[in-house]
Amino acid sequence: MNPYEKLLLQNKAWSEEKTQVDKDFFSRLAGQQKPKFLWIGCSDSRVPANEITGTDPGEIFVHRNIANMVVHTDLNMLSVLQYAVEVLQVEHVIVCGHYGCGGIEAALGNRSLGLINKWLRNIKEVYKMYNGEIDGIDNHSEKVNRLVELNVMEQCQDLIKTSIIQKAWKARQAPEIHGWVYGLNNGLVKELTTIKADFEAINPIFRYDQADL
Image 1 (cartoon, rainbow, N blue to C red):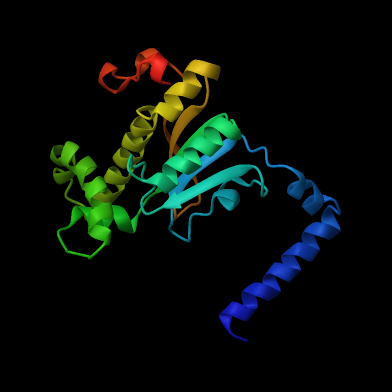
Image 2: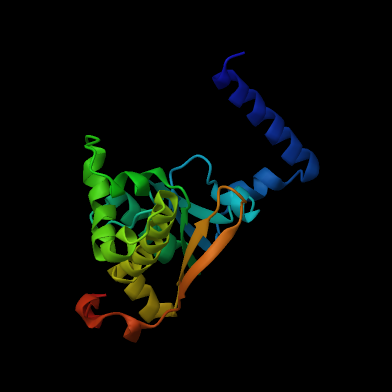
């Protein structure tokens, strides 16, 4: 049996197990989508949102990209954010990075990797902001992990610079923004930051006029 066929068999077994435990699981799931959380995570296959948080399908709306970035020219991410915030009206947006992130490590170096260079440039901008602190760390793994943390916190800040979040804060004082880091070696999440809905806390340079929201 090849790996692809194994996936199909595992899907069938999973579906049967879910139905045995709760015969209405899939009919209920198909009926509506009311997640309270938007997850912006890394594409790394070892960081699945539902398994990490012990939640069922339907509880977390998920967007993933390399190194969990909030890039203001990324229409994919912005479309997911707008749908989650304005249509699903999620109450929390979680940016979750993970220690040992390959995208973060690549951004610390100078090797040309082709098309992905354009994406890593966004991480390098974060590195530039904190290069004194990062370059002062001798241990390479610790250096990577500290940039992982700083990157998560900067992506949270980038979220509140969007008109999508600002409009929601004005309209319904939500969602809260959370920055997490996941440990591959222990399966635990570390909370780095929480930003509550507060329009006045946004740097005035990045605020949009109420008439434009």
